[in-house]
Image (cartoon, rainbow, N blue to C red; front, side, top):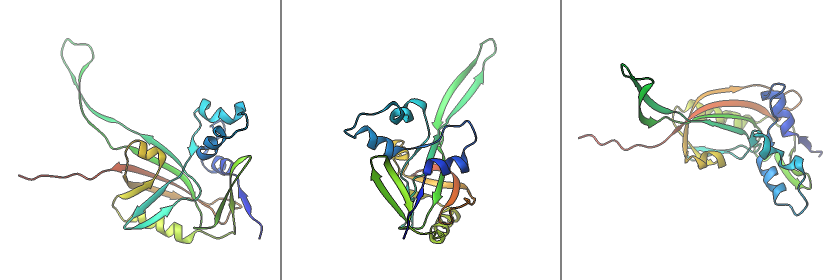
Length: 204
């Protein structure tokens, strides 16, 4: 049975990116190349020089049900601080009172594929992804929808970017799907979420 190679950078560009925007790179691929014994060419380190978005692993869970994205998605993060600004007569500018850090806004762009239907090959050109068969990811699609409709926080089991900001839970706000021409076994999706954490309230 022939494998169908998925050129991740190309399909991300066709679904999510407009002309002129940087094409994402595979973070694991770029890291692997840095540790190879072969000399590193300028193009191999371009990801670090141009600020391109990176594809990286993500695994989430809800009620002991895990969802692992075999095709690494792109995550972006935005944080804001709550500031109270007070204008004082005769004073240029404002008095600023920093009150708290808001939840982080998380954007996820990725592709769903059936569990076990993706084969990863690491050769001299880096990590390459292949579909074993044109199987529609029905189970994964239903699972992601269930995570969204649960109306409660999901656990972040694995994510290099989110763990750096100590984000262990997040709540979905929006979820959208589209189709990818020529790839029955891949379903593009985009999600917006906010970070969440557990709090202990003491009522006296």
